Image (cartoon, rainbow, N blue to C red; front, top):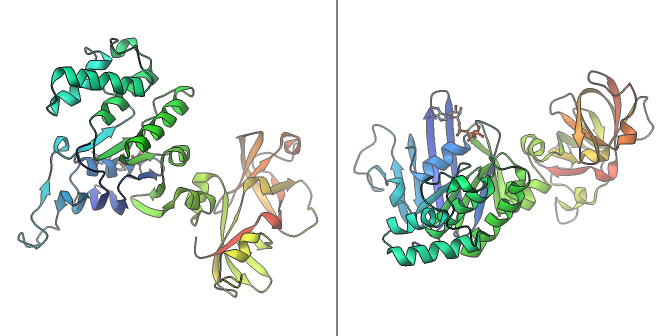
Length: 380
Ligand SMILES: Nc1ncnc2c1ncn2[C@@H]1O[C@H](COP(=O)(O)OP(=O)(O)OP(=O)(O)O)[C@@H](O)[C@H]1O
């Protein structure tokens, strides 16, 4: 490694025409942060700022104690205490970047591709080749070192790129959708390999993806980016199991509604909802009550499989009428999207999804199991 594992901190603003990225984030040394968000939310821009490929409009990027990028607002005094503007070149930052394209040299063998980076950082030829062979074995390519990229599958090429990136022992590794170009068989294998190797080497890493699975498998923490701003962050398990914004809930495929508590329950856009989930009583004060028992803003969360749909109004609490937006396949059944803001999801078993009444544009009755309704204090 170029030194002991170092954390990353970035507080930057990038203005690009109509788009503005404005984020502040920290990744502790040796940990992995996933940045997830939809297309054009600014994920790649953020990585490129950390890699030194994009100069921010203002802000600072540090790896450990070392400042790699600093840009002050225009018109500020140049001899400020925090130092002059600077942009350390990408190749001198100790920061590796692995994208969806392995970008291997086509005329070099796999071993030579991995050894190239080591040679350019000053290692002699024989030890560089030896180290390259060791790394190819670590990524499951023992015996294929003499092949050129054209003689390797897409997944194998990406293994070579991972070996090359990690063999250089970067202080920080940036992963920009590293699995996006792989087929459905290779992607899980490479995801697992990356997770193992990043952890085994203790490399600090930032992975950007629109796929929540990458965050779950690869990362300790997740930051959710929307239109250039971080809308939620925390440990993956916490953010994904109890999203606090409708945006993140949609990303992880659960339902979340803003509400207000009153004596009778929770008022939401679809009507009053009862909750008897244990979490409703555990996420507030130590005595079990919620922080704002009356009139307080809260978020109501329930999984799509807790929603049943009916042609005629059913009995019971938590019943509301809705319009079907569309139907799509779901694991073991059918996912129905119900129109509204936010859109709600219902996962039905195939037998429940029969009948003419369940069609896009049709009116249906929805019922949510009160035992599956979780309520937490806060705004969505
Ligand atoms: N070189 C550039 N010049 C001007 N605008 C750019 C440039 N590169 C990206 N943008 C704009 O910045 C915004 C964010 O793009 P970015 O590629 O960072 O998003 P992303 O979240 O990585 O998207 P995707 O998931 O589609 O890769 C977009 O609106 C994009 O059009």
